[in-house]
Image (tube, rainbow, N blue to C red; front, side):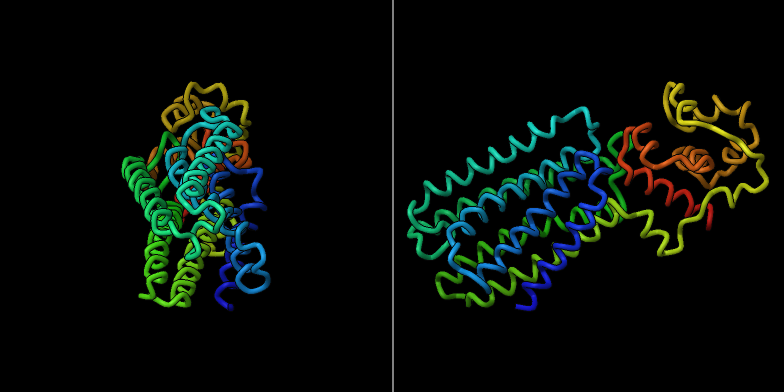
Length: 331
């Protein structure tokens, strides 16, 4: 019972971290928010039925199958959508399509089952067929997930997909696929008496708790990287490293006139008006061109949200690039 409540608690923290920064999310990050929310709802429902009220078993069984497949599909689509520009997607159409596909899979499950009974339950005489069908869906979607992940470049355009953010996202989604296949296999063994139902329950809770931990870390690296780095004492304003440069001013509107926002364009456009600043940055061979551009932008303390809109990347990518640049300057 303790592990069940712990699982819900950790899932609730992950969801809260996403909710508090919801307005700052890119489309792909909103998919993470939906994934976290449905995971928390599923865990809470499971806890309620198993320990407080089992009179809604059929609702839990039916909704569980729908949510399970919806989350699997979201995992795949998230990897596909990462780094795509906001204009590429119609959020309503995408979510509606994912729901429709999940409903179709549920209807197939319902038709396979002994229709008037629970689906993934020993009382269903066709439960083995339902399990095999679901494992097939899992393997197919997991294979597609791996393919999209391996073909995804470190950065899609200017959008970052690397480091700890990449690690925790991949761990959360991969563990969800693996735990689903593992639990379904254990369920078949439990029906045959090979494993005890208690073992199946404890393994399920343990794996779901791990997924919750990975989602918490993904939420931190998605929404709270700036605060997280302050706690770790790694945030340092670049002005501290530029005390010898004169005072300069710049507005977002000044940057919008550039043909392309990159260091080469910034350097050549501002090398006269901001001579000492751009030359100081240019002479720092320890910084990459992207880091030099962020070093220049950091001098003017633009809000991350405005930079996100200017550069067509997520706030997470802006904060990550600032963090890496500052860490190099601090070294």
